[in-house]
Length: 177
Image (cartoon, rainbow, N blue to C red; front, side, top):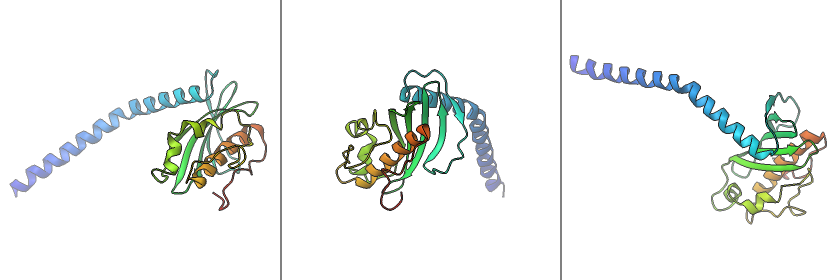
C-alpha cells in the first residue's frame, strides 16, 4: 500500500504546485494581454492615445466589444464564415472611415478562406471604406473563398454602421451569416 501512496501523494503535490504557480502568474498574464490589446488598438486607430471600453447592448450580434478613443472606435466583431466564426478588430474614425482591421481568429479552410488572415492586398481593400464595402462591387473576394470574403465584409460594414448609426445590411451572406 505504501508503494501506491507515495507516487499518488507526489502527483497531488506537483499538481497543487502547478496550480499555485498558474494562479500566481494570472495577474501578470492578464496585464500582458491588456497591454497587447492596447497596442493593437493604437495601431488600428492611428492618432488615438487612450481607449475606454464601452458597453454594447445593440441588436447587431456581429459586434462583441466597443473601444472608444478620441478620434473614433475600434470594434471587436465575430461573424460566421464558411468553417466557423471569424473574430476581428476594426478601427473606424468618428466620421465613419475604416483605418485598420485585423483578423484575430478564424477556422476557415486552409489554402482558401484561411488566406484572408495574411492576404494584405485583400484586407487593404477595406481601408478608407465607409460602410459601403460589397464583394463583387468594390471588394474583390479571395479566390475560392467568397463566403469568407463576405463574412469579413459584413464585419467591416457592421463596425462602420455602429459608429455612424447607419444600416449595415450590405455585405451580408445569403445564408444570414
